[in-house]
Image (cartoon, rainbow, N blue to C red; front, side, top):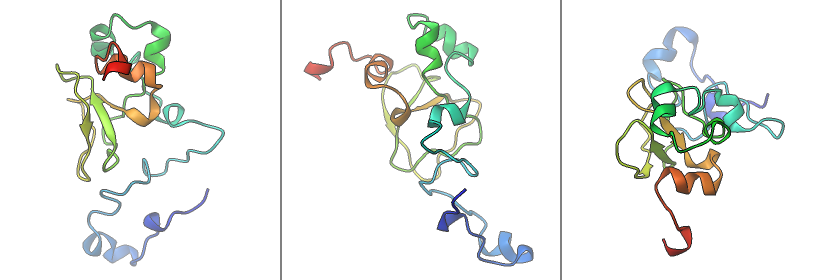
Length: 134
């Protein structure tokens, strides 16, 4: 696995937490320890999908099981990519949101990264019926 400069520990172990308490906060390098390469997609690495999250599964009843399995949901504790576009499936509105560096997934949210969802499926998620007219 290639080591990214952001993940390098630059201080001795005993001082690391004091000198760098928010290590990797707001960095756009994915989940810590995640290795996404050409052999695996991001959604395969995340593991959890809209099909697996029961409240989301019930809310998206108009989607097929195959569609739900293609919609990755960030696990609790995962940081959202700063500037990335997401949809919170736990929210009642279907708006897109742009993440800031301090945003993190938790049990109250079901964040879906736009970059991991095919466009036709994404448009359905945000309620766009006719994307040509948007």
